[in-house]
Image (cartoon, rainbow, N blue to C red; front, top):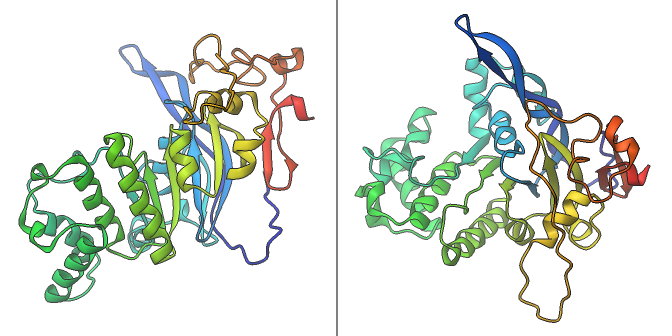
Length: 330
């Protein structure tokens, strides 16, 4: 898929081309590879500078694997990740180390991602030390500034992660990600482990920080209501592939793919007058080690046709900026 920019003011910061990640399945005494789990299978999308791009789908669809490949915590099987026009997958370790300050990640688990033996001040200061940023006194001032930015206090610097709540720990993770003034932050399910009352606070914080520092986000979530609150454009993944990509308004009010419609039908609403038909999908998600022929969604699709069972649909533009992989629109 090649996205055509209709607005010259939009600059592509990140472009993913043909991204694949196959995990080998090994059996026997000799541990021979007998098959592969196709976690991500030929993914294509772009993220504009300054936007929040949402990646959504059921658990196991490959969205977290995608995020980790983009920041090279996982090495792809195939494909390209172009950051500011340069393929970061071709960088050696030394080159990657220099570039890594431009893209950071906020992890799903706010406790496991923090070193329990380090104080909060040390955790936030660590990226500055690794990249030789600022003198010791200036680093301490930077840590204090970052704590204030994420809604914490200076006296928290000498405390340890176990002394904080889940929401506070996630704020610490966000402060660490901001330390090097990155251009892109991959937020991998950053609120899914938090109480509902805390989720909105962290989401509002992320939104404020994005405006304040002109950040670009890749926001990964399984929750469409969370995605709607924060994102400008949204990509929907199913079984390692992108099935729909559109601006937020188009996706929520005119979803094209049957899978997207089923996901949206499950989003709860507080409007009693709104009548919503719940679309219940039959069957389970197929195994990524043995995906079905044709359209990967045809085994569960309520609008399946014969062509869906034998021919994989092309991911194509239907409306301006609205892409879908479905035979209904060919």
